[in-house]
Length: 245
Image (cartoon, rainbow, N blue to C red):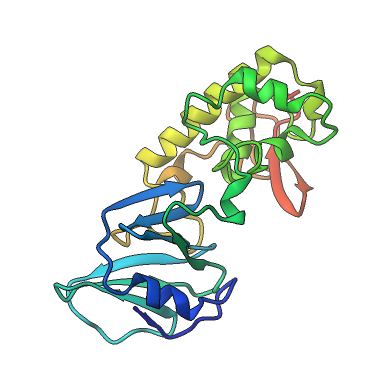
C-alpha cells in the first residue's frame, strides 16, 4: 500500500499500511457510505467523501495529482484511490472491531428493518422537519439531499413539515417511495450533476428523472405550479406548495 497523501478528512495512519500488507481480501461489503474490504485479520474501511473514487488498474500508471493511495495486489494490479477534495477516509479495523463512525448508524433504506412503523416511531416527539429526519444517518442511512427531495415530492409531503406532525399512513407511503426512488437511481447508475461518475467512468442517468431537485422556478410536472426553493440545514430543498402538504 502506497500512501502519497495521508491528509484526508482524517489522516491515514501508518498502521493501516502495516496491517494490510500481506493480507488477502476475502470479501467486499458496504455499510452506509463506507466500503469494507474484509481479510482474515481485519477490515479496510474506505469512505469516498464527496468526489472520491476507486479504480482497478491492471498495471501501474503514473498517478495524477489527486491519486492519493495505491493498494497493490500480488498479480500486479492496483486499486487506486482518487479524492480531489480529500473529504474521504481510510481506516483499518482489527478483526470484527467496530468504529465510532459505524456505531450509531440507522438501518439500510432498502432493508426490511426500514419500514413505515419504524420511521413513524422514530419521528414521535421530534420537532425537526421531516426532510431533516430522513437525512439523519442515525435514523436511516443513504437518503441524500437529492433523493430526499424526490421522495418527499412523490409522497406528497412538504419537506418543512414537522416530523412529529406526519401520520403513520404517510410514513408508510414515504418509506415505499424512498425505496422506489433509490432503486430507480441505482438502476440508472446514480445521479450526475457535477463530478460524479460510475465505476466505469460514465455518468449516472437518474438526473433525467428528477421531478423537483434543481428545478426551482420550473413548473411542477403534476399541477404546473412553479416549484419553490428553500434552504434547510444549508441544503437546497425544492418542492411544490400545491402537491406537497
